[in-house]
Image (cartoon, rainbow, N blue to C red; front, side):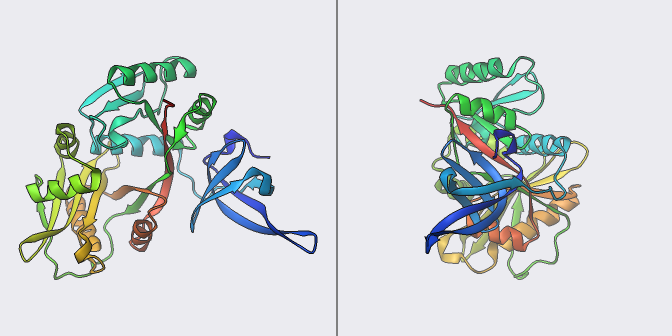
Length: 316
């Protein structure tokens, strides 16, 4: 049977989906195990998340990994992503990062447990809980899988909750030729007020800490697409990382009336071209697995999942 050590690995599950003439009917599912509890398991499959009651599992086993990134590669990308989304209030717990940004986005308000926290794991989690209590915020920890599986097991024991899985996806640069080349994408070193308004609408407000997160990166560009003087599409690109230089894509947004015109693709291509000129060799983005429309768009552009993470939330 599966164990917590299997979280973050690809598995195949044969589950019972019905009974016919007294005999069970089976269905197989393949995906990455992102959650395992006493009652359910959750798989990240190509069709989206699949939650299966343990009572329906007939058989489950790991499958051989296909070019899984090394632990060092996951750490390097996670640190590049942190550099691209910098929380204004920061501290360290050994190698772990503690981050706070007035509650604006999970990424900027969660601990990143990569490396050695310089103390036993239970004491490290205690320290994370105290630090966020001092900030007046609920404690959250981002757990890259399978790297942080031991952290996840400790949090399970403490009754921490979990947000939906997030895919960290990557693609080599440059991208193939863009679509809708006639669309003009303006790249600026600072966001316009209209750009910030779109971001505020998507993220539920824009405190002062959010402006720091968005702008406090040495190499950053803000994409603007206008139609009849109105901003209809936005995006943000950063170039960060030591050794391999990563283009980080975020806040790719098209207003509802302008969707299905290829604007998101054009924004991504424009930022990718800038990223190459700034020395980036690969691009990355973070997308919730349940956002199937965005996942399909990125898949069409060549993005594949590098690794997955869960945002874990301390119980009240």
